[in-house]
Length: 85
Image: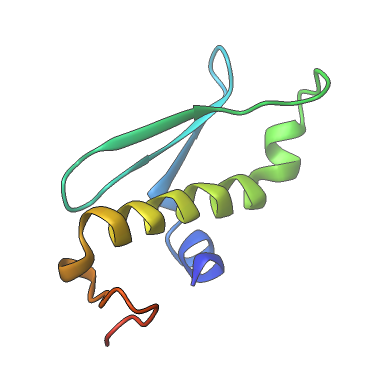
């Protein structure tokens, strides 16, 4: 599911390289925003470009966890590990 979200809906995770690089995700149900700085081990201008897919996967994971935790009924989560269709 995460790969699908990151690949087919890249707009769910906004990546900013202005100033300190960060990514953010906004809940489409309640508009809560989670923003996190992107930590990198060494200064490399191409870091974001090289790891963009992985950054998007992390962002979509945070969104999925938020949806399950805060909006289980709206997303069809029954609390038993299954997502209803």
